[in-house]
Amino acid sequence: MKLYSAPDPAPNPRRVRIFMVEKGIAMPEVMVSLRDREHKAPEFRAKNPWGQVPTLELDDGRTISETVAICRYLEALHPTPPLFGRDAFEQAEVEMWTRRVELTLMTPVGMFWRHAHPYTAHLLTQYKDFGESNRDLYMAACTLIDRALADGRPFLVGEAYTMADICAQSTVDFASFTGLEPPESAAHLAAWRARVSARPSAQPNARIADAA
Image (tube, rainbow, N blue to C red; front, side):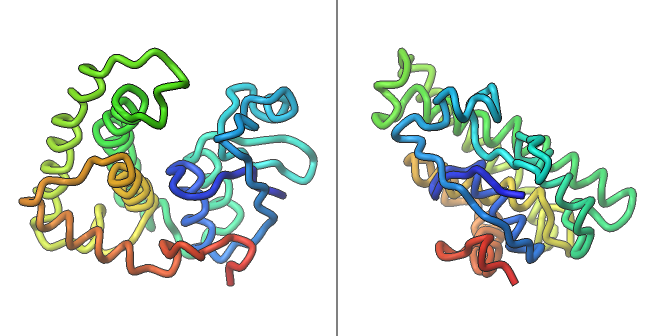
């Protein structure tokens, strides 16, 4: 297998990279230049018609795209340590939190990035007022997550670090890259972020080819 990916700060490839390092899965990682639009080239669209990374290519040539789908496939092949939950209730919580992160946290970050950031101005017609309006939505989502963490849980679903945390940390870190920072009052979120950022899988030099 091989993973078609992109370097940091691209948040979606980083999700899968963190997941694989946590699992100790090593495989070739083919970097696709987003700046050079390699992900939109016909050769890459033959693997993923949506022209997005990451894309996992299996040994028989079949491909899987979308971060959670890729990680679920790898979880089925490598169930230890479990990153999608250890029992039925925890699995449901991971699904719940992953969905919350994608809809309420990642969506406003993506809209801010697309419509209010100078790096993307040449890619599309920007609606800057709309882009800036997502700042408040992101702050509100950060506040809700902060309140959930106020009960003392170390991670989003409790004691176990899971895919939900991976989704959230890649989003929050990318948000910082775009200029969006969580509210200073979100102390519990800040403590969670420090915990997940200290993990070996979160380090800039963490690579799936070196996973132990």
